[in-house]
Amino acid sequence: GCDKFCAFCVVPYTRGAEVSRPADRVMTEARDLVERGVREITLLGQNVNAYHGHEAGLAGLIRDLAGIDGLERIRFTTSHPNDMDDALIAAHGEIEKLMPYLHLPVQSGSDRILKAMNRKHTAEEYVRLIGRIRAARPDILMSGDFIVGFPGETDQDFADTMALIEEVGYGQAFSFKYSARPGTPAAERTEVAEAVKHARLQELQALLARQQRDAQDAMIGREVKVLFEKPGRMPGQMVGKSEYLHAVHVQANRIEPGDIMSVRIVRSNSNSLGGELLGDQATVASA
Image (tube, rainbow, N blue to C red; front, top):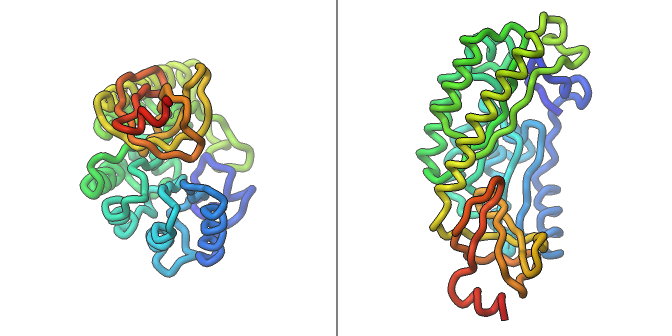
């Protein structure tokens, strides 16, 4: 559930109030999964960083999970800027198993639209928060959500959103045209013309695509750890995810799902990376 009541969102009305599973139950399930071979766990919630099932919040739960032998990677999604507290920011800099990827939706870069959306933060507060997160973990890859054409959005409001995207720089993002959800406050307001929404979305997605390409290109030559998941489309190819949630393709014959190996990135594709296994791993994997 969710207690935020953003003006565009139906979740609080359909899923109810936020409920947190007790930490001991989460820990028990995590240990069981690890015993069955799971090496990465994602903590999932509509607003997961508002978690209150642990006395130390989500950061405390992550620290406990990091102590489980055999659990190599921890992620969480989705987050609300207002619940990104000091302890969780510090966790990104201190817990090696917490992956350097954060999905932190903002929806708009206009303070006027953020207020109309009932987001309860300003664009400047969001940008400052990103700065604090990056100070704790400089290599973190940021992801976000954006809605264009929210009722009342002007050309200047949209320009403010584009400016925020330019300032933050996203490695990945999700973007949508506003569509009314019956029963929500925004559904009662006058909508932006469909043609305007479409044009704004195209412009915004072009900027985000350039930023994603830049983030991927910056990975070329870097060494990353890849958790392999499945065979690729090409013979002898395996596909996995880097710490930064990039899909990475590698040619190798003896990699098994669940293997974590060091890979040097040699190629940036449209929505993935290509890499080569490093050192002795290459000999073993291709034997």
